[in-house]
Length: 75
Image (cartoon, rainbow, N blue to C red; front, side, top):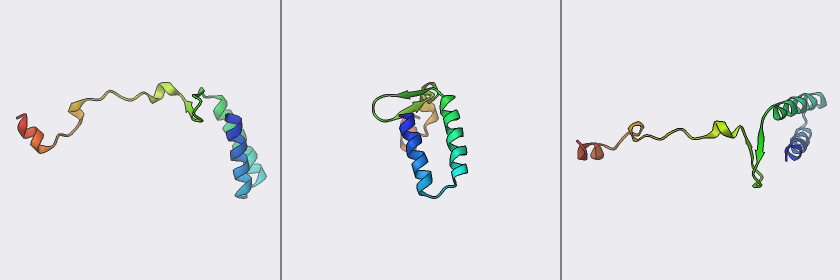
């Protein structure tokens, strides 16, 4: 999956006329960045990186502003 993305990105940069040296620099840094991350693939053509960081925060009703009518009802 990562290789497909890299091939697509390189082809797109060539299509829009990015200089060869710039393409090489961008591709090298992208490969280094991808190698430094944990990447997960779930079969739906989606890449997930660092899944532990994507957990939603806890929800609290005290953080939600209530409508004035609701505040009056519980007052």
